[in-house]
Image (cartoon, rainbow, N blue to C red; front, side, top):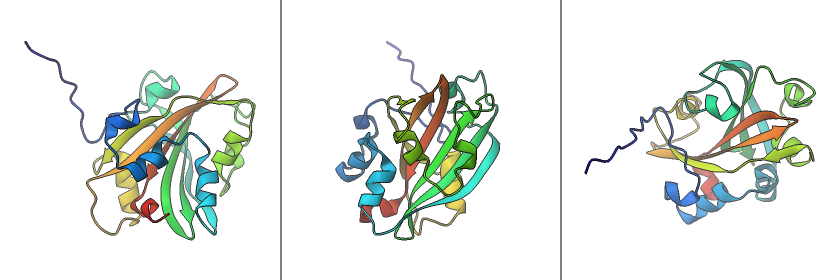
Length: 188
């Protein structure tokens, strides 16, 4: 009997609905699977929390993202990339996208966040609904890991980085947040 196997290339992540699908160690599994505000949790684990915005503007969405925000193919989106830092140490790389058709009524504060936390905005807005969490091990050839490596944030080679993502919806408009946990998260 022949089984059809899904071929997963390292440049496209295989996202799992359950945390056990990525076989993360208990400590990182706890960070990944917690549905509360990651910003609030990082603040509680540090003396000083800071958001460092790397970029925000138009960009092409990734091959494993477009369907999540209801696009038919890889297209231009509004993208935001930040580092979440605890005591001046980057511990999470966050990547957020939303369709270009999203408007200021649907996401009123997104364009003007600057170095402020998106998480605080999302979790304090009663119109925002969070979808399920999905989990992945991102390998070195995944575009987000390539971006992280280009920032020289990781001192020694790692086989993969742990990540989670979920869709937030406000007034019918989807916003995809992907959080990649950097090795220094273990020190919190």
